[in-house]
Image 1 (spheres, one colour):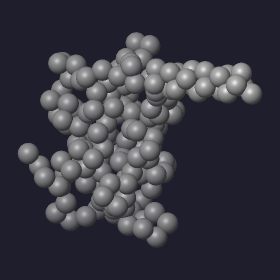
Image 2 (image 1 turned 180 degrees about the horizontal axis):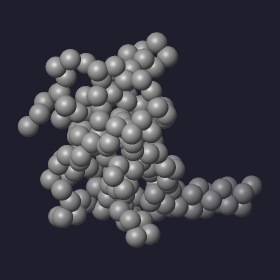
Image 3 (image 1 turned 135 degrees about the vertical axis):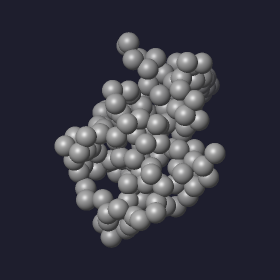
Length: 168
């Protein structure tokens, strides 16, 4: 019996050790003008294809409008405009997608170019924002991961959405 107890304790010790060494986070990857971004998966409510967005008069330029998602009114945010990137041509605009996130009990649809995969990345590979990252991007980024020849910029969704309510 004591041998079984020792075995269980050593197994628990190994699993505790491996869980602290191998902690990971999951991100939904999105692409905007060829740049890879990640949104923490726990913040993602839904991924949507093309939807009809109704314009809102006098809204900030980053707010594309609102849409109806299963009976709920959702504010649509153009992430390109939030990042200081040029708008897409109207022909390309119809193929954009959106990721629905929850912030302060409100739903927001982040309009992006395309959605990729869900990546599980190790915390040990996470890096602070590079000095060369654009200042606007730094203000809405938690940091980066270096992936096979690409950089994944992790979006700080609460900061991105708060910047719309309280512009600098």
